[in-house]
Structures are given as structure tokens and as C-alpha cells.
Image 1 (cartoon, rainbow, N blue to C red):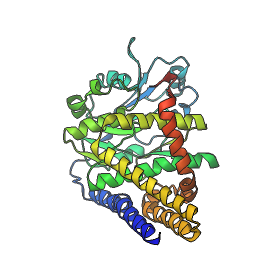
Image 2: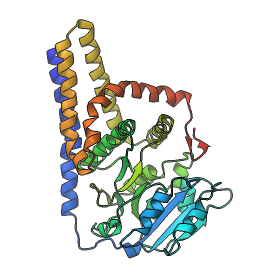
Image 3: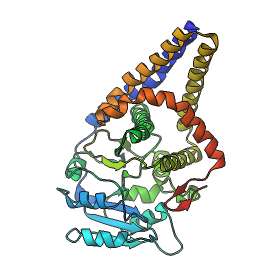
Image 4: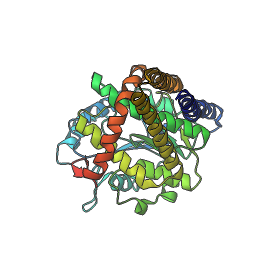
Length: 367
């Protein structure tokens, strides 16, 4: 039993450490060494903000826009057939800020169509997409202008909890982002967030392949990342909070589950070999870990049970610490031991619901 425990912990540290720690350091090195002869200019950026029935959540975004020290070329809101007074609230608050509100055409719905409708109205070099419920610091665009030119940037979107339970809703997202950043350092990223997504407009028009994923209601970000990647474009992951946006965690457990099921759905649909390999490797490691714990309990080997569980918790705390520190999520980091206990039940619940439940998004049910 001791031999199996040592082997598992060694393999786990090498695999996860290679991605989460070594890859993270390599990605940071890439960003520092990038050619800075041509930097992004805010005057070349159009911000696109699709929204649907966000009257109760959009105020925090509008307040952040009003406090900006520097503005982009244009801000365009796209109303995806809202039934509330979100557009009126925008007009009421942004009285001195240049902006436009476009309405999604009749017969077209969803974030993907809304973004493409607005993109056809743009003339800027770059597109930056935000979700309608994010907020950010006043120096956002000042910091954005410090980034070297690239075809695409995956910029940080940080979940911020407001209650003890909501901190647990953050953990899997931060862990996933840590692995994604590490993969970017080693080879390439496998996921993106449309909450803070930056890309070259002309390259987008060149590589966009909407028809291949129009059957999925959400996930424009990850599919667009795939289109850029398949065409060998320059895709980079920026870490830290200088160009981060922040958003609250899901308010209820139901919202949390719906969100995670949407993410799982688009991840499995995208058919990314690297993403599949990482997912399968994590699955095998998880099954092995809980299998060894189960055998320890069955044999009454409580010492080995403790060594295995505590060893994995310590490994995760050490290997992921630099990323959590960079993102200033140390309280969330401290809850990793609790997450380790809840993870098997959480994973089993998601697995069952994948086949028995259809989540909703923006008032629309998703298959």
C-alpha cells in the first residue's frame, strides 16, 4: 500500500506540477519577453457588451465605465431581445459617455449572433468583449495599453465571492484557470472566457467558423479560441489583475450547477485533443486517488489514508499557490482542503445531471 501511495503522489506532483507550476512560470516568462515594439492602443479598441434581461445586474458595469481613466474607441451594447428595462438604465446612467445600443435582429437570438451583428458595425483594429455583470478598476485601459500586440489575449475574469459558501464556488474555476495558464506556457491554452476576451477584428473575420458551433447556445469564447488556434494565430494568456474584470459567483446552488453544466457541455462538444487528454488524465488520477483511499479504509490502513489525503492536499496547496497569489485569491486557496473532500460528490452530481437535466441560460433552456 505504501508503494502505491508513493507512486501516485509522485505521478500526481509531476503531472500537475509540470502544468500548474512549471507552465505558469514559463507563461510569465513569455509575457515578459514578448516584443513590445508595438503595443495595444485603446483608441483602436471597440468594447462589445451583449446583454439580455440584465437590469438588476448591469449597474456595477455601468458604474465601472463611468470611473474609467481612459476610454476605448467605442462601447457598443447589444440587446439580445431583453424583456426588462436594461436599455433604459444604460441610457439613464451613461449620459456623458459615448456609446451605442444595438438590437439583435428579429429571428436571431443568443450571444453569438449578437456579437457578430455588432462586429459587422465595427471599424476598430481590436474587439474586446465583456459580460454585462462585470466590473473593473479605473486604470483598466491604461494597463491594457502595456500589452504587446497579438491576435488574441485571454484576459483574467475573476469570480469574487460575497459569502462563505460562494468561496467554494470559486475554487474549481481558479484551478481550471491555473491549468489553462500553465498549458499556455507549455504549449497552448484550451479554454477562454468571453467575460474579458480580446482579439483582432480582421483575424476574427478571417477565421470565424460559426456554422461549426451554432448548435450550442453558449461557448462563443472557447469555440473562437479554437478557430484562432486552428489557424495558427498568436494567442496569449495574460495573468494578474491589471487587466482583470471581476464578477460575482453564482448566487444560488442552482445557478452554480447550471453554469458548470453549460461549461461541461461546450467543453465536450469542442473535441479538442489536448483538452480531452487533460480531462482524461485528471479523471484517471481522481479515480486512482479515491480508489486508494477506499482500499485504505477497507484494509483499516488509516495511516496510509492520512498520508495519501494529506499528501495530495499539500501538493495542491504548494503547486497552485503561485497562481492563486498572482490572482489575489488566497482565501479561496485556503479552502482547497475542503474542496478535496467535496470534489467526488460534486463530480458525481455533475455526471448524473449531464444525462438527466437541461440547464437554463438567459431564460433559455439549453440541451
